[in-house]
Image (cartoon, rainbow, N blue to C red; front, top):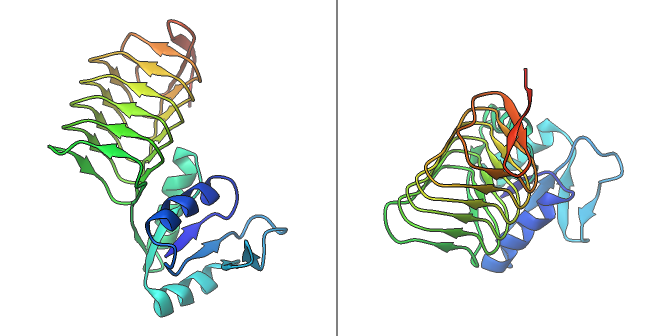
Length: 211
């Protein structure tokens, strides 16, 4: 499998995969940072060009996962690597607790360590749910969202596409969060949030509109 990215979050994705299968054939991709090259931890090759990635897919299978945060970046990387024949797959930590009924996790999600997902939860394509986050029943989360560590999403919430939820934020029950919303770290959301807005505070209020 190819992990897109070779710094920061990509190393956390590596740990999720390694704990499930220490012997899995892995490589990383980073064409941004010139100082990232050779082999990560002296073991995993770091590819530096899209042509190298194309060859890797042909020779080693076409699965990839995204080891980069940010809703916009994740969507662009999905488009870039599927265009050369890649297939985005999910990585789900062995320490995540996921309910037995009615859950749907889309392709290419990263479900990180100690996440709790109850029942009847639907998570869209390419979404990142970071460590120690809890998601209540009957929640729907759209494509290419980023849910940071220690977020609490209460039951019956609807979260749109491309949403960023900062570390430690709380979303109270039965709320609708629009598309391309940013919820600041530590915010407590008690009202619906319209598209393209940034909210922050306790309780959360609109701070600005996002173009």
